[in-house]
Image (cartoon, rainbow, N blue to C red; front, side, top):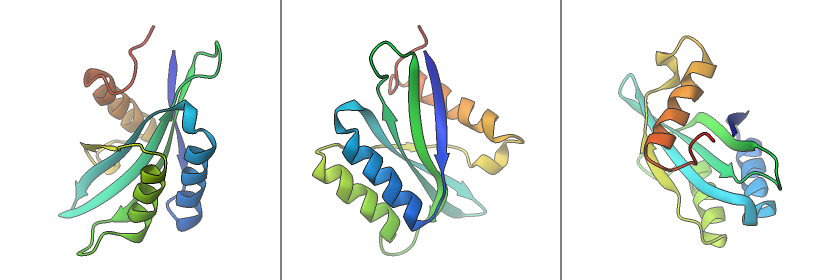
Length: 128
């Protein structure tokens, strides 16, 4: 099974697009994630949804808005929008602490690292 991250942007429009993907694909959602990472003592959040493969396709997409949400005293609006959408869909996101993407030379290595963490914790299916 091919498990691949599909990166959306960091802005409000991208968050709304991710939320709309979740609503349209409600039956396909395998899991939703809120990743947190720290860089220079600032916490950043990434939000993602993993979708089950369609029919016999061997493709397991994980749509992500990477590190565009910065922790603040009040909950960031973009994170609140994502959580509200998941509440409407009765989906509980899984929170995972990970390394910041700046630790990796290439973003593909970063995504392989996250896929490894998700597989090891049985949050996404193993390779078949």
